[in-house]
Length: 528
Image 1 (cartoon, one colour):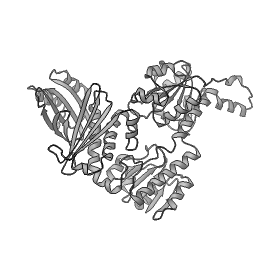
Image 2 (tube, helix red, strand yellow):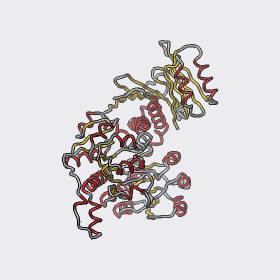
Image 3 (tube, helix red, strand yellow):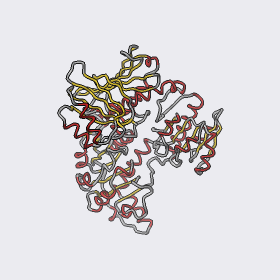
């Protein structure tokens, strides 16, 4: 089997591949896209770093390609949707550089506090002066962290060694969990108002894009230092420039920018109180060896033993089992995404019920798929099959499973329920005909619909005129209804309407529906 390596790999990672019987290594660092398109036709496994774009076109030209291994964390250069369509496993190496990235954040903070880069440059230019480079102590200061993932947790450990106090803002972590990490759980406003040093450790999504902007900078403790070794889009750079110029921020250390590489005339690069590095967060010899060895081993395990490790788009199971599980995995992930978009109550526990013929299969991969589907709309695209169970545990959310051979009118069924102090919400689904996913229940209502496309979930009083209201409102907005199902509650008085529509419904129409006293709740969901 042919293994193609497109980017620079450590000798240790390459040697693992060379020493494995049955594998033929083709090492082509820096291969041009047109050459890669030719070679990919006979490739069984592709190993890349961040420099190779693995596009849908490339995968379409690779009939033998079984696995793409990314040495590193980010997979922005890989078209995951195309890989899913073609059944290609995509893996990454999520633990190979955690320590290295945390160390870089601390190094940037210390360099910023003591103005080390500026002083070094001055000495090299013949200026032997200390007064212009007077810094500030770390000891006894408050470090504010936004995000509480693996890297942030390691930063907390290092900060304790520096005798710093640590405040943490992460709305998805409980106070108990944060306390165990050695930090204080605070609101974003409190974090901003108390931090002497502020460090970002969150993914980039709709919730976090431009998290730091003119409004949030205005709430900062004056003279705070900012460290960003996460992602550039987290910060509004125009607002950052203003905060640095007016003294709101004493300085900033940046390993990443909104546009990379930053333009030479980027005004941030002209400021003396800004230090920056070109994505050095994982750039150590040890980290590079770790991630390339891990990626190589993932390819060896899959090609030689059918074992999937650290896969982002499928659970880590034997390849033969994966084929039989795929329809159930799709159903599970879609049910999770459906419920996440319907949520209007906080939850602290998750209950999963498996019933019917599917209990003949291992259910752990299905639970992972449910958690991935549930967390992705809440936290963002960084959720995958590798980290979903860990993130649930980090947030102190309990997960329980039950299995029964009887599925109450179906050959198989999955029910997902989330519970909290304000009550519970649930969805149920089943496979029809062996591979067609269907929604069969929402809370206590029996419904039927396809978990795909634009859906409207309407809870309403069981009174005349509701269907006419829905039809009229959608018709006036020129929105066609593809499927509709109505379910009454057995005890009477309430009903649920599940509609599949051809396009997103404008918010003005949703407000119109909610304004009617017969409508108890109206929301729309999108399942791609």
